[in-house]
Image (cartoon, helix red, strand yellow):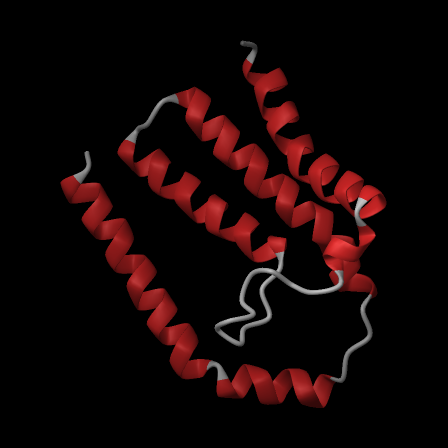
Length: 126
C-alpha cells in the first residue's frame, strides 16, 4: 500500500472512531473509561502520546515502515482530535501550577521508566 495513503488512513481512524461514536452513542461518553479505577484524568490524547513514544522506540529498533506509519498515524490522529478541545477549555492557572508542582515525583518516575524502556528496547530487541 502507498505509504502516504496508509498514514492518512491511520491518521483519520481515531478521529472518525471517536467523533462518529460520539454522534451515534453520546451516552457512552458521559463517563471516562480509561483511568477511572486509578483515579487519573486520562484522555485519548494521552494514548496518542503513548503511541508516539512507541513509534520512537520502533524507529530505534528499525522496525518495518508499514507498522511505523500506522502507529504514527494513529498516535497523531488521537492527539489532534483532542488538541483543539484542550485549547478551548477554560482553566485556572493557579490550579494548573499546583498540579504541575505536585506532579514532579510522578513525572520524574515516568521519565525514568520511559528512558529505561528505550535503552532496554534498543539493546535487547534490536
